[in-house]
Image: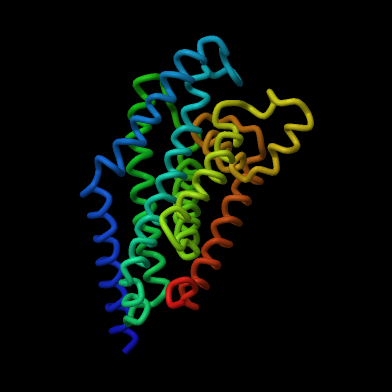
Length: 260
């Protein structure tokens, strides 16, 4: 019996993942290309035009310094955006209820959607990295940390997107968090500057921003430099990921916002 349940969930996971992957690459002009174009503009405007006037930060050219932040920004926004739009569409079309009453475990449904978000985040990040190589030389100082940060943050924001979709009642609701929370926190999280450049009080305020720890952890993995302790950064990332996983699983288990 247990073996049959495992096989059912394995088939269910593969089917859900296949659906998410097909959705991402079927409309690749909307899901993959626009973020790459946006990041190219960032490199041109902030890297080439403004960066030449700023000079080096921590002995790295400004273009190289901002590259990890821009890659991380693409991971955050696309992991979040893929799950929030896909899950909310399923909720709106009422086929999520069928998943919840099927033999599939809630954890299987959760992993299916999150895996789709991770794949889109990594796909866009790969394309942005290729774009970055046209503007600057990138190295990976700590491959293990770099890979771990990418995976954890992709999972973290995929979970955040699912939670947003659960509470959303219309399409306007799924744009509130990206517009008024993710974008400001990401811009203020050290993508374009080192917090050492900020006055004392603003450095203290910046350290309250969780994005600072995520972006700097990735920058440490790529370049070997960071404004914060890598131990602290990884602790923040893992804490947020585990917390959001528990919340997302609880919401699916109770059917909050889906069976209501």
